[in-house]
Image 1 (cartoon, rainbow, N blue to C red):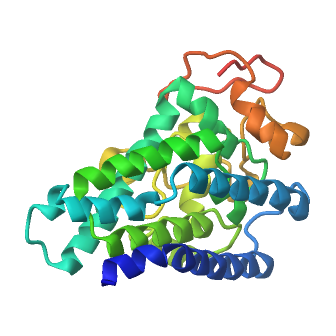
Image 2 (cartoon, rainbow, N blue to C red):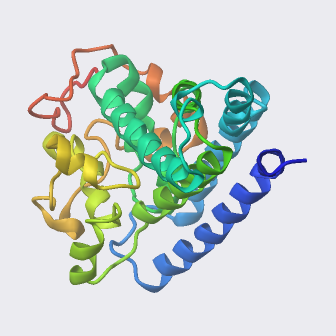
Length: 290
């Protein structure tokens, strides 16, 4: 068995080990130095959010047993993809893989905000009334399936090494938990770190109820894309303690923080002309059909 096959066979163990390690670290950090006071009991939200993660993991394994790593191994065996056509040193190929796939995630994130039908599914992520590490994995099952298909297409076009795909998956999951963490960083550290990595204060702005804040800071791991494409916003206008998390219309915990309600949320209301450049959200009590 070669190195790539070993990595492919042990991908689940490697990713699960990294996930659990980062989860515990961020969870303890949240207890030690929280950024905001949570509105809802942590146990109730975590049960629903983690329950959705478990459901999504089961569905993905049933639909796509090989996952992105298996597709990368297949592409390598067939000689498909850009990196399989050129003699790129392994280290550079891994780096290109991580950066290129992170750019695709950024573009995908912009897309699910810009296309009304896709926003209906993505709003499950934004409807969380609080913001902590479990929010980073809270996505509707159909959005997760779409994301996996986009990932497959990226792998087939890019032809990345298996090690690069696994490293990207680990970084993506770890950064999603970190930058959704309800954790406090010293302001000086945050200002420096957000040039290299999306920080919690940087990404939290994206979860504001205000449209020109929610439609900014789309990056998950690398912060450069927001600065490059003009979607970067430094701070929320109300400050991190004063900003409201979620979506104006969807404030009922029975809907947005219960697993059945989360799964049903995309199918509630009419499809509207919601677009990424809409100037304002509907205010509480007004009809919102997006």
